[in-house]
Length: 313
Ligand code: SF4
Ligand code: SF4
Image 1: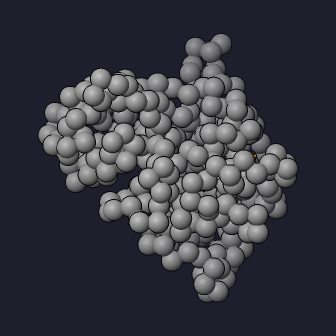
Image 2: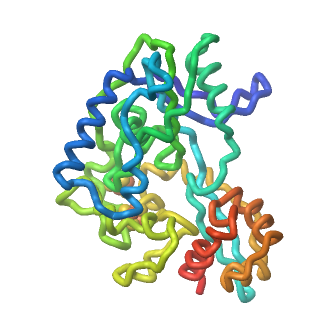
């Protein structure tokens, strides 16, 4: 079963995020787990500490607390690229904050209501968030919701790669199971743009799986110095990396919907670069950058100082 939401339910006066979804039976979860187990056993998963911290806690399985779950709903919600102006030494630097790094304002409750009212459309069924436990990108690809780009990102029709993924278990038995083979986007067949754009050479002709050990987000999402092998010119976003997405033809339309957040003042930029932060500044930055994680606690703030220095100093 699949359905595309209208961008808004304006006729009814209800604003709703643009989303698409697919549904797969939980009977396929063991197949996915088996595949991951084999990759792990054969040493084919990167040992990068940050990468492993993202995947090692995940298991494709029905939760013990929800034995009646029979389907997984996988949702992609459009999330625009955000742009933020930083004022520094009389100049304005417009920097990118990619989706998934800022709070898009869509609560879990809102998502669950969308699942209940727009997908299941029948009251009385249990719905439980599954995104914490499952590798949702894999599920998006195996459900046909998304296709892989050569850059190994998940692309969804109408959103490009600018999206957030969510998964929910439910005891509602859908009539249709969307399980399918993993596919690469047709647009990638004759295209090599991301391969040329990647500053760290992660994308190659020989292997479809990118070299995650060199992928920038694994270094700028966490504390610590950037590795010596990484060129200074690699840095391009406040967190994460947009290099393989910006010139991607499959993102042309989605990038037109980029949003602009409130500018960061000279005083605020100087304080970030010096690492002199107090609760008042943290609050102001967190509001302007919509809950961007380094602005939510003093402990995480050094990540923003380091990333901003790499971009404008
Ligand atoms: S830049 Fe080209 S090859 Fe890379 S993901 Fe986009 S369409 Fe595919
Ligand atoms: S996210 Fe950046 S570093 Fe990673 S593959 Fe894309 S361009 Fe390369």
